[in-house]
Length: 314
Image 1: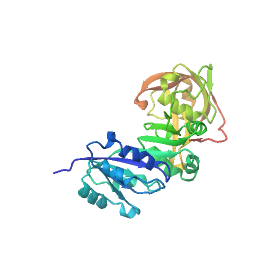
Image 2: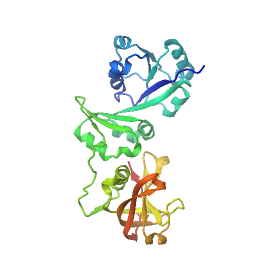
Image 3: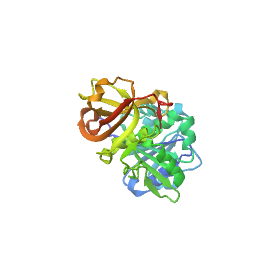
Image 4: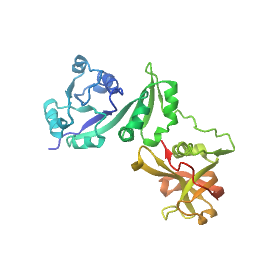
């Protein structure tokens, strides 16, 4: 007889990123623990500690793994047989490879939600020195909480356009005093009252994410940017793509961020051509977008020299 599926909530982040402070109120509050037997697996111990008395009161059992070699599927099975949990919470070591968790969970434990906590005061350091791990933490999360924010740090985080790392995740900024706001506060990143939105090289990535997430915002707007052409049989007849290659965290994560162009001029364009294009944004149903998306109707286009830095960075 198959065992009942057990939801697993995994909390990720580097050491001292606020994982324990995020988990503690969750486990000691009736909304999460009511009528549940919760198993807490801790794979990294920081300065903050759990109150064992509070955990017992809410029927939470805790197991600590200090060594990655001990954190195995068989060990989790033994804990499952011992405590018979109805839900599992994992405080995951920030230095461990995130995909490895699938090799650890018993078959009936189902990864239900991944939450990543990020200390805003150390984000810049970790993103520079441990970019691949930071990408894992944010890129695989269902929710990301940037804590210890100040107004200055919030502006820095929003300026980094981090939604590009994971457009499906909910992202929040948490300030001192537990004030919290959404990462995307609904404010357009550009002045849309100007007749032509001239995008700098640094602006292109920000605009690309925003126009894909909020296409209605740019409907009918005239946009101008320097980009690289891509031709493909996969594009609708009479269109090509134009955009920039972007590096999210490292060279292996380079990807092309392009929007469709439409106009008779594209017949003279070739893949990898650099062009300065100005066009009006129309919203059209395109298979490539799997629905409605932006198509730039060309108003003016000319061959151009490549920029000094061809990549867009996040």
